[in-house]
Length: 44
Image (tube, rainbow, N blue to C red; front, side):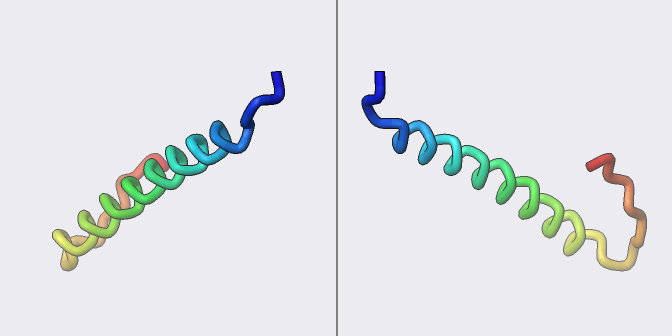
């Protein structure tokens, strides 16, 4: 049953990095789009 756990870990890490990067990029885009407006309305 010990075939290749590294592949699963790589997939998990890639998925996590993708989600984190997407959320971080969206936050940066929202900030850049609304610079004068200083309202933090995120439940994260």
